[in-house]
Picture 1 (cartoon, rainbow, N blue to C red):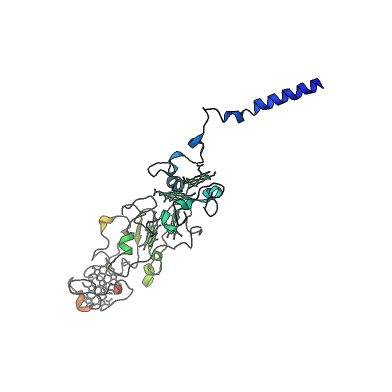
Picture 2: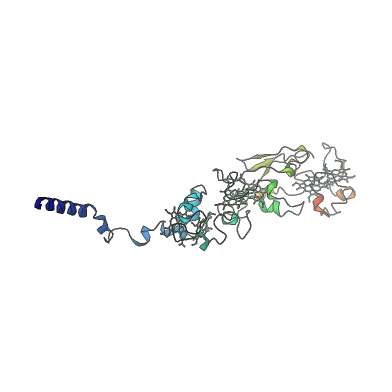
Amino acid sequence: MTSRYLLHAAIASLCLYWTGCAELTDDPLQPSGPAARAHPEGWIIGSSDEHHAKAIAAAGWDLVECQTCHGVDYSGGITASSCYTCHDQGPEDCDVCHGGGGQIHPPEDLSGSSDPASRGVGAHMAHLSTQATTPLECDDCHQIPAGFADPAHIDGDGRAEVIFGERALTGGAMPIYDVDMASCANTYCHSGGRFGLNPTVTWNDPEANEGACGTCHALAPGPETAHVQVNATSCAICHASMIDADDNFIDASLHMNGEPDL
Ligand code: HEC
Ligand code: HEC
Ligand code: HEC
Ligand code: HEC
Ligand code: HEC
Ligand code: HEC
């Protein structure tokens, strides 16, 4: 009996020794407090390189990992911490990553830049607010994802896919977007060579002024085109429904609408 008691006592003290980690939590040299939290200290400090926005971008914009702890609906899950505290429409709301203030398109791009030389910003505003024709829609250049989780949305390259809509294809044009150069060629809108000019336009070069008169079609169309030979100030004589004698558009919706307007 005595030897069995001693054996038990020995095992018990060994267990205490091995499970000493229970005591280590009281050790002042061990991590505790903020450093033991789930995330780095800068996780919600806007100016920090550790901010979760930067971590999410670096991880390919995948929110699935966040959902494992914060819940599939982001309301807290196994943590007591809901994303809705700050993102009142939830973190999958379009303007959390794109644009801002309720709009889902640049000027502010995914990198946080609003500089038109940044390819995410580029000439969005020039196209979406043009006064020279009916303003463009997103699907003239992109397919809009049905929702955040649409497989066509985030596909790993971190960059928007340009897929031309009907407008750029008008009249049988065969437009090409060059991803490396961020440039477009052969779009109907920039005239696609039909009027003597076929500019390759660079998306993110604001200095190029690709929207000026005379860049898409000559002003006036020269002898290499089938157009009647005219001088530059005379457009309104024949195209009177769309332009006045000072080359101001009377009805811009007739400009770049797929047919000549007289
Ligand atoms: C392993 C579980 C786990 C994962 C994965 C996780 N979190 Fe957390 N998160 C927590 C816990 C627990 C808290 C509560 C505070 C703490 O302990 O740091 C927290 C807190 C936060 C906070 C602070 C909330 C506040 O009001 O202070 C934010 C922001 C946050 N998480 C964002 C994210 C994001 C974004 C992701 C995905 C990139 C993510 N978390 C992934 C567990 C996790
Ligand atoms: C304490 C407030 C706070 C909480 C809680 C919070 N966020 Fe954020 N989050 C922000 C702020 C502020 C930004 C914008 C940072 C910026 O513009 O650089 C942001 C940005 C983001 C972005 C945009 C990334 C980008 O670069 O555009 C995503 C995605 C995101 N948060 C996801 C989450 C998720 C998922 C949770 C919950 C797990 C969460 N956030 C909880 C404050 C919060
Ligand atoms: C005239 C064509 C055109 C129109 C119209 C257009 N986009 Fe874009 N968009 C582009 C090009 C070109 C890029 C840059 C692609 C690249 O990085 O190669 C881009 C990039 C983007 C990006 C990625 C931004 C980033 O930070 O990388 C988003 C998001 C986007 N567009 C959304 C929209 C939305 C939403 C609309 C409508 C409100 C819209 N676009 C209208 C041509 C267009
Ligand atoms: C967590 C960040 C995030 C959120 C939230 C988000 N997006 Fe995006 N979005 C991206 C990224 C990253 C890209 C670049 C596409 C890629 O990686 O292929 C993108 C690309 C786009 C594009 C360009 C076309 C394309 O598919 O490449 C459009 C349009 C777009 N998003 C619309 C939306 C809409 C609409 C919503 C809301 C339903 C939304 N996004 C929510 C990150 C986000
Ligand atoms: C003397 C009359 C006349 C004048 C002046 C004139 N045009 Fe035209 N234009 C036409 C006619 C007719 C057509 C349609 C037949 C054709 O394509 O040649 C046309 C067609 C066009 C087209 C092609 C439209 C399309 O969809 O195919 C362009 C571009 C054009 N004109 C530009 C101009 C510009 C710019 C001016 C001023 C510098 C101008 N025109 C002055 C008569 C004129
Ligand atoms: C972004 C390219 C682009 C720019 C910049 C541009 N045009 Fe055009 N323009 C076109 C296209 C494409 C057509 C042929 C489509 C059409 O018939 O509307 C056209 C047609 C015309 C026509 C023929 C009338 C007609 O509707 O067919 C006139 C006149 C004209 N443009 C004048 C101008 C003037 C003046 C300016 C400068 C204020 C200008 N364009 C700038 C692309 C452009």
